[in-house]
Image (cartoon, rainbow, N blue to C red; front, side):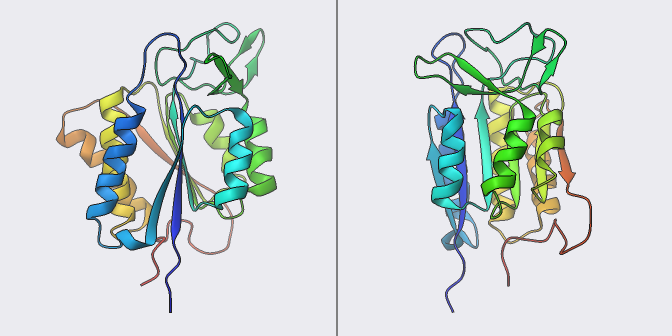
Length: 223
């Protein structure tokens, strides 16, 4: 019996202006970790660079991924309306008063296009049935996580800011655990451990969809 192949769909959005993030290094480190894992043959990393908002919809339809991973710039929740650039892995939420914040994708010219949590929720409701886990490897991701957990078993996000090296090490620890056959909770703990072993700052969080049904933290691999 052939085992199911789990697709990890990694979106990268890196605005042309301002600070560049090491998104290619994050993808390479993740692939290297998957290649070393016990169940490496059951995982495929699919990258999608310079991601625009509609790419999320297209990627979900095309690949039917088990995991959606987002890496890129963002804007802080208190920042004034969408700027032409974003310099850290900051990710906000929606609209508060005159402040527009959200998860940052790219425009064709490289500037930031902000997608609000409600739009993310509706997208995953429409075409995200295959997704077990969303990883927001940005900053300030709580509002997005709360929106997404209505339709996704588990969401990982960062409280406050996170730097490139910390984001990369969290990803390698996380996917080494997942592709090693551990539960999502165990893999999350391994991602956090990778940060601590390197002495890096970062406050990863794990949010689980409430309600009945199968254990949302169960391993992706069925032994």
